[in-house]
Length: 242
Length: 242
DNA sequence: GTCTATAGAGCGATAGAC
DNA sequence: GTCTATCGCTCTATAGAC
Image (cartoon, rainbow over all chains, first blue to last red):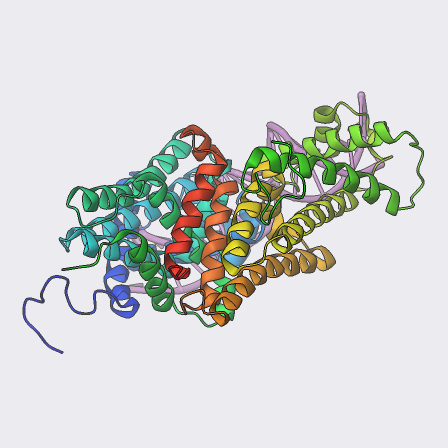
């Protein structure tokens, strides 16, 4: 088990359990820094309080919004669900818009960071494809309410938030596009249109967080799903080795 | 072009253009019969008026709801968008609930009817798989706003409507499950788990109507998409012939 | 005792029912 | 057009950690 300088890809790279450890660290960092960055009238000093309350707030926003929509969520709903008073809530954000912005920003930060890191950690097109599929599924498993929220609320966004969301969406699709195109350039993948391919892969990844309940009912684990999706994709794109 | 007793599958079975002719007939029938069935206080006699106005109403409901959600749509919005007065509107349905019910009922009727018909028209597992994929895509292309609406509003439904929607969703997944399972039983398909397979196929079909704008921007036609999806699925499931 | 963090009534604006 | 319910948000007294 204990091993120095793990090979490439490292052991347990394709296991949800070990993925979660990495994620939890990132999440705290991002809570903290996103709160520091906005130099608003800040009266809260204790790091622990900030993280604890932000976690409650975001969790409650997602819970309520995923039931009845962000727009239909009142601040009183949020106060009730989170157990924080109206006054307390407004110490953590400057308004409903700001709250939405924070939520979106954090999801994008975590997702982008981890996807990039883990794809960069491997080298062959085949490994990159596998890493991208697994990591995306692990992320959406760990942060399912965020992913669901982001999808459902996307069409209600306006202005800068809308643009950022669209850009982020495009970037993650381009990531798969690039892997497929590189694989073809290296003669490792079959020459199927990588643009449509990237869309279809994303569609399959998306189903995991949009229909999370269905898969839970059927006791399908994220690792089982990832394995099936990867084999499906591999059969179509990856040329036989040797 | 003119041909007696077309073979199985008939010519132009896999072309969106010819599919549309079948659909337009079905749609009129269903408008008419769904309106006749509900023996409410009916003051409208002329068939032409009924179809014309129901089409306006449903079109408007979908347009507004797909922008801001069905719940957020007021009857005033609908009156404005459809060009019908509040009084006129209430000749066609008894309230917002009833309107929703009619909309859902019609989508289910058309979808179920055409899917069944067209799958029954072919016999081999391979043809059935192809017919199911193409027909589902053609349906969601022709009725994109309906499909989008149904997906987005699903979580806001209650009671009997919710149950019917869930049942319909399950039925269409089972349809793909059965095709895959039959194919395996006949030794025509590889033995990959048909349950997960049905889910993944549905996920890819779903992307067509959820991201319709994206594919339009890229000038991907429904026939191109259908071809790609089918080849993708075929590679994984269908055994080489001979 | 000091000061951070919270409580929750209250304000003005507004959207929807009638 | 009116009227009410509810919205986002603010204000300031005070509870409680140190």
